Length: 115
Image (tube, rainbow, N blue to C red; front, side, top):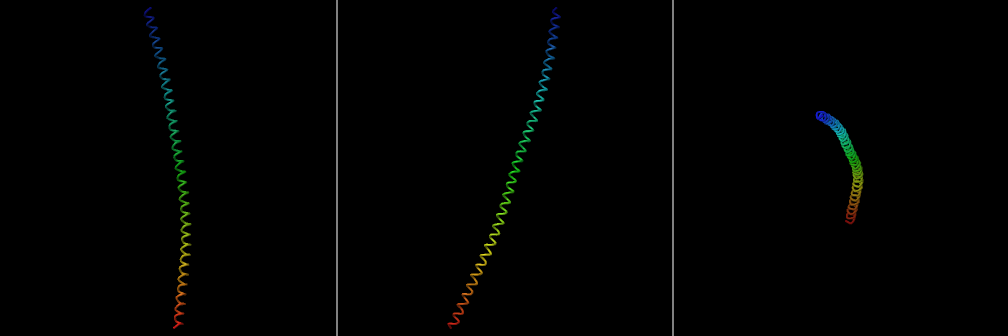
């Protein structure tokens, strides 16, 4: 009878060990699945973050391009205004020089006539 009890216990122990191995394998499988899911989630989040950064860079580049274009247009307007102002200044200077020359000739004539 002791042999039967020992044999029954041994079978029970083997059965429990088998159940524990199955449970351990099931837990390992579940952990692998969760690990894969976590890895996939991490990769997805990294990809989303990278896309967000690239989107930010694209916006910043576009903003810089727009600013550069505005500065170029502003520079062109200023250059044109400078040319117009410079031409006007040259014309005024030429007019003043011509008036001064006429005034000088008039004085010379006046001096000549008074002699």
